[in-house]
Image 1 (cartoon, helix red, strand yellow):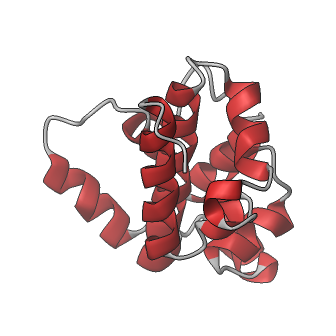
Image 2 (cartoon, helix red, strand yellow):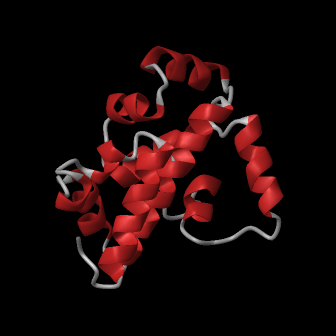
Length: 146
């Protein structure tokens, strides 16, 4: 059965959308213990990326991802943390475009002058880059475009 994002969003998708859990320490612990591969698949669909593209961005090989899926093993903490990073940026972009997910998805993939001509998803491959994307979104929300 295919996972339905709209009916039961995985935790990383829901939490990154701003639904703050009653216990933020629990969210940190979940990342430390590794998110399920269903989180990867749900975020991949939201971002409109191929498995290979999101695997490259999160630093996991497709073979390792496949093995973890087959064995029902969670992702490691580093990969889980990167998934949360991209989910956070996705939902910030959706908010920037007043809930228009298609426009947010397209914006994340287009070169942005404020990021030296790189696409936000590419620029966010490091935490420092992700913070810069967040700052750009904040500037755009307030009409301060540089």
